[in-house]
Length: 336
Ligand code: ATP
Ligand code: MG
Image 1: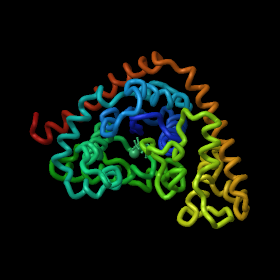
Image 2: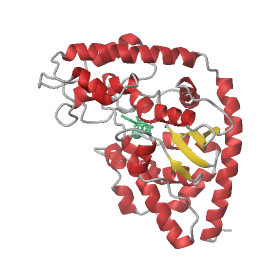
Image 3: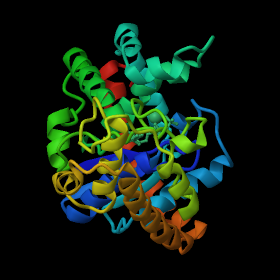
Image 4: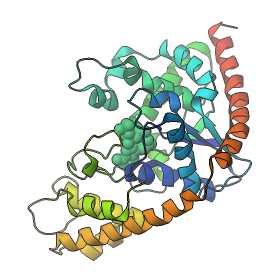
C-alpha cells in the first residue's frame, strides 16, 4: 500500500490558512481513499523548534493532532498518528541527506529567504529544514503530501535530493509525485495559498505578529468578524477575482469557496461585478465564524487521552517503517 503523508508544525495555534491548505485536504483524502493508502499524520516537532514556541509546546502538539480529528479524520488501522521526535530515524536520515543536499539549492528556498530576511542572524535549522522534510517524506516512501503552496518547492527539492542519492548509492528511495500530480490528486485547481488579511500580497502565517492579519482556529465569532471586516481590500470598487490586482478581495472569495465547500467559479459568479465590499466581508465573516464554532465544539469533545492512545500505536508503526528504510540507507552508504 502506498503512503500519503502530512505534517503541520506545532509552534502555536493554527491559522485558517493551515486548515484550508493542509489539514482539510489531508482529511478529505484520508476519508476518500480509506483502505487504499497508508495515511501518516505527524507533528513535526523538530521542525517546530526552528521558530519561537508560542504557548506550551506539549499542549500545542496534542492540540494540532486533535485538530485533524475535529476536522473529521476517521481513524482506522491505516491511519498513523505520530510525533517526529519519537521516531529518531528522521533526524538521522536528515544528517545523511545533508551530505547529499547542496548549500546552493538550500539557499534558493523561498521559505528560508523569507524567514531569514532582515535578521542579523538565523538558526541553522531554518536553513536546513527542507532536508529534514525530505527525510520525513523519504523514510515512508510517501507518494502524495497534501501541503499549501509555500511548501511545494520542498517537495521538488526532496525529489532532487532522492534522485541524486539514488544515482550515487543505488535505488534506495521512492520519489514523491511531482507538483502537478500532487495538485491533481488533491483535486484542486492550483496549490492553496490563503493570504494575510492586512498584507494580502503575503501568505497568512501563524508566526506573523499582527493578530488582525490571521484567523486563528481558536478565534471567537466576534474576533473573526472584526478581522475580516477590517481586512485590506483595494480602491477598484468592483468585485473581481484577480489575485494580482485585487488580492484582498480575491482572498475573501477563495476563503468563502473553500470554507463553504463550493467551487470557486460558483462563488466568483455570485459576486463578480458587485460593488459592496462590505456585503462580501459580512458573508465571509458569517461563513468562517459558523465553521469555526462547529469545529471548536467538536474539538472540545476530544481528550488528551484519545490522542495519546493513537500516538502509542502510531509511533510503533512509524519506527518500524522508518528504521527499515534507514537501515537500507545506512547499508547503501556503507555505514552498515
Ligand atoms: P509559520 O509562520 O510558523 O511558518 P505557517 O502558517 O507557515 O507557520 P507551517 O507549519 O509552516 O505553517 O505549515 C504547515 C502547513 O500549512 C504546510 O502544509 C503549509 O503549506 C500550510 N500553509 C501554511 N500557510 C498557508 C496558507 N497561508 N495557505 C495555505 N496553506 C498554508
Ligand atoms: Mg511556514
